[in-house]
Picture (cartoon, rainbow, N blue to C red):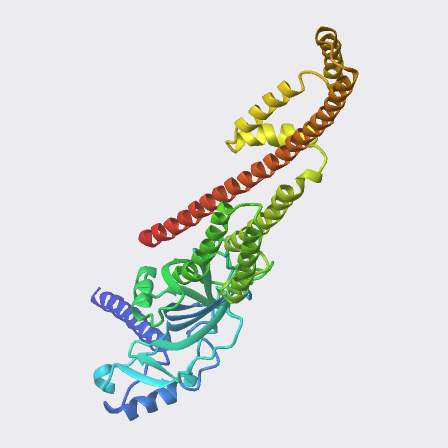
Length: 488
């Protein structure tokens, strides 16, 4: 009985010994080959150990099994906004970009090797092919040749980046425009099976660093940043292929409009206001048309000189260009109106009477619209003409002859005196006809002059309305610009 128990205990011990041996062998087999030991705590010893165990493995991803994806952290800080080209739809910036990833199994004892961090040439390690998808030009920034490696196997790689990227710029509200450009970080070749990306820090921290390190204070100002991680790549998403992992940053920029307000909008307003007050000059004077022509010439030269400050793009027309075109169109319209009114004032006596529809449209409805009632002089002249033309010249001639016969019979005038009275009567009738013709011409001339005054008043009111609306529009855009700045 005792021998049986001894055999049972012996079998159990053999089984436990087998299991223990198996576990030890498994731990030895699964021990990472990149874990290194240093012969002494010195840089040379650590460098020799890395050279023997890792420097010859830069062709593949630093993982124990190729089915394991490499986790890469991405971050950046914006140092400068160099240029925004509206015509080419390009954003030119200077960034400092850094990546970090882990070499699986690589580690060392800081006490044994003398340090927990070492700087080594970048070409000695495998590096991810992370690019900015919107990049359209080579990186012209100075090269960086080193990366840092810590004792846990984490590599940190940072380098300056001159980014010339495409950006969908909307300049409709120029110079009060806010642009939203995108930086999409992603691998050029590796899919999500190989490389997976993550943010190295919150986007608020990225914005804070960028505003702190920003060196330029030019036309554009960085307002805010937004970060997101799309589910699928929008650049390399083909059927039957694994998706690419990407990180998306929205860079929100705001233009400083003071330069354009001072150099473009204010001079334009000054010139159009001067043209507005030129309506106070007599319309029949030649000086008014010459003055307006001088203003148009000056405004044209102003637009030519300031053309370099205006954005040029093919997809939209900025609102400020519409404003300048309307200003120039109003100046030309006021000059043409002045020429028309001057012609009416100076040569209306040779014109035919106004058509009836023109009288109704302009002298009745439009005159009421521009607050110009009927002149009292027209009413008085009409009353006088009615009194004068109450009887025709033929009726007056017959009445005069009857009066002459009666007078002759009563006073017994001589035949010679009757003839003289008849001649005087005929001369008076001729004079009366000339006076009636003169009054008729005066009435026609007054109607034409009245038409010119109504048109002149209408153009003046149109000027005032345009200036008021455009000023309110610019103020609304400006207030929105400042409100957006405060919210940001």
